[in-house]
Length: 72
Figure 1 (cartoon, one colour):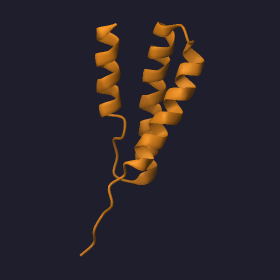
Figure 2 (cartoon, helix red, strand yellow):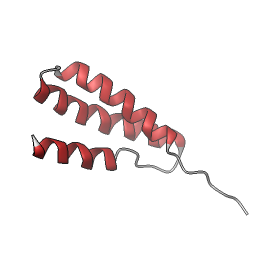
Figure 3 (cartoon, helix red, strand yellow):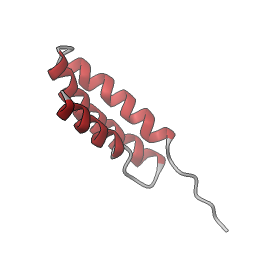
């Protein structure tokens, strides 16, 4: 179980890769869906529900954490 928690922490750390709001939402959703499928399969929730939940959370986290660019 510790191995899966560490894997989830790593995947959450790289969830939002990209420069723009859209890129971060897409990559966050993709990585979140993958990690959610793995976690869902391991915990008995199911692969598809885990992927759906993980994708939604990953896309939301990726879009919400987009850094603002300052133009001088």
